[in-house]
Length: 295
Image (cartoon, rainbow, N blue to C red):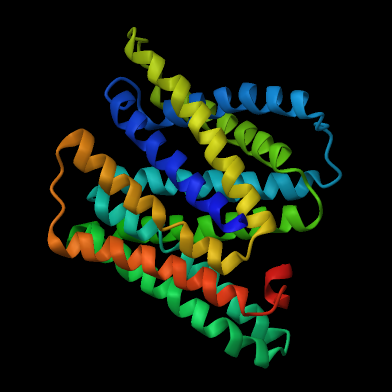
């Protein structure tokens, strides 16, 4: 059941991306980060009030680290989007699943639990298979003059992996998902506002500015589901199921924007789905809590 939260999060994020595509014609990316975070603050503060979740946290520095890493990753990804073909930027960012797998297996080996590496191995292979499906679906390209932007895109995926592991760590210490998302929204708002001091602001055009509302709400819902998935689910399985966002995005592109999906793209999406199912099945036969997943 917990794995399904990541699929739902991917659906929310993919739907949010559609809204961003429309809103980006009227607002720059820094503004979108700020407004997305600000709306998320209002939404999550209301959610916390209704659910009776206190805003006071016993681990403030863990939230600060999660916000710093998450916002840095988001900024790097937006830079990559601006400088690289969209498919390439998305592929580099989705390497976060590979990084998560590498960190967990490395942590298991450092802890001397070699026997657990063998049990995690098949799930790691499903993560790699899922990323292969991402490459088949997006078919990224990189020119020689785009190497620096490619490096930034690679770092965005690395930063996202650190952020996801920090989300899982917050869940392990008992932090409510709503509070984790709220503090990340605060971090995104502050970072976006600082960026707007340098980029300036765009004029609000109505009714197009209304796209900001679903962006903020969908981002908050996606973060909430993703946080619950990483907090309560098996980390490697969740990292794999994150790739389902590519499937949703490709289908949205076909239905809403007339994008053509070639045969290799359909094969890639099938591989993503198959690898997610395989990871879920294999994880049910592995250890209940591998040490590397305790972070």
